Image (cartoon, rainbow, N blue to C red; front, side, top):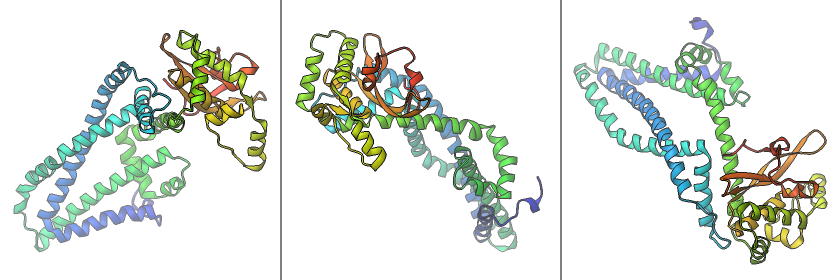
Length: 381
């Protein structure tokens, strides 16, 4: 330890941590020995139960995740029909998200299992804490001795609470190294000392190294889930779009043939709307259009191509998704872009396609597609 001079400063984080200990000490003096013992034991038992619940929930979620994925895969989820309700479309999006996104699936299972464990252990924690602290009930609460002991126990309880807060602040700094509060937190001498002497050694890099990696991966999966919103937005498919999709694919026997036929149709029938791009880049005006408008006007930008393709593919009973991210601009850089992924059942895989670029070459599942398209949130399964 570096001494009190290095940890006592004017930083509000330092004062907050000291205030937590001081408040608990004062409460301990007023409670006396027996009351403070009960509070401290309850805190310790609760902390142990919380850690055990987290570990058990993580293990159970990890074990259950592949079974849930297999079950959802075996269900053979099919895209709702053209006239399906928004609720049906939302349910399909949620279930396919659980099926395709492993970290999301783990997180949902963890939250459900952890909630159940905490409900079951809540009453047990109170009972155990009361039983453990029962022998200390004979210690007098009043008097100088009782209140001194109570103050000491209260200070210990406050130190535990301050330690938990320090761990939370440490996790925040690990997750947001450039966050608005990170520099301010790290200027606290007491925080730095506790983090260096207690939190970092105790967690062994779990909070500082693995938590940010998990958070970035989870953020990527949430981006992928967010992209599924078009399943809900475009759930009501106009009859003319559906009929066109069925006509284009009427002689196609496989998913790949249907998917490629729709790619060819959208890529050749829809013109790129340069005026829409100009209005957005120069005037900030963005014209949101649905697949019906793209189909009727026969023009749009990349997101319009992609949404129309997805709607027509769903009408042809294909599993499809709109993907957003960055596309190579041909000048050494990347710009915002959208394309599609469609599931080919006979090959049991998702293939990428870009109908917006169809006039420039073959962009239906070509080699090196990922070299020119960077999907938002990383690669999907």
